[in-house]
Length: 185
Image 1 (cartoon, rainbow, N blue to C red):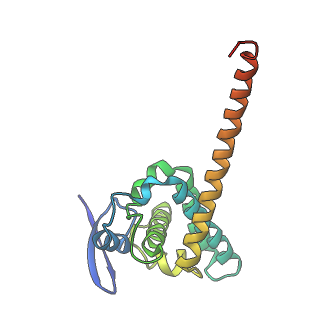
Image 2: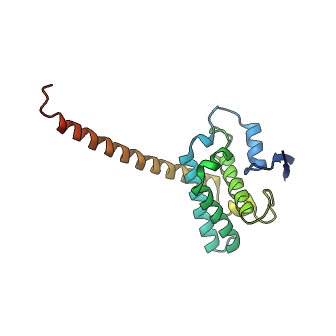
Image 3: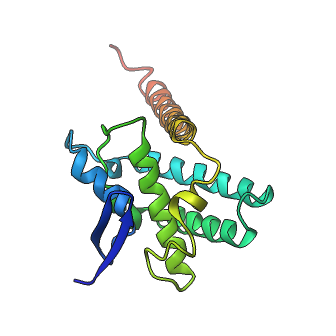
């Protein structure tokens, strides 16, 4: 299988070419294998985190913290991931219990978004001189803000879904109660 090499302050690492995540995620996988639960098991959270990153890219483009071209690359990648989430969940392999306050999960999302954006625009995964996971996708963000924001959005979406299901169940039970109202109990 084809490989690509990425580097960080700790050195270089080879990754399989088909992976959308990068070196930071690989280091998290090596260092934080705490439970058997992966972020990929919670697509509602991944969806919320990608929405959060998209909102940040829109704002960063508007205030010119990054160029409009880079902002649009990130926004389009986020839209693509959101539209094809089932295809991308496997690229969120970090443990739900990991070091820090969500840093590895946040960087995992930055790397996936960045590499999807690069690929969508004709570049190779890991061509971070064009678009960088931290310098561009994560621009003006703190994990301590992005992670809890995504978590709250995921809870909100989950609660809306639960309310919808409970409302439907209530209606079904009401119909059954009316249908059996004349049955002696």
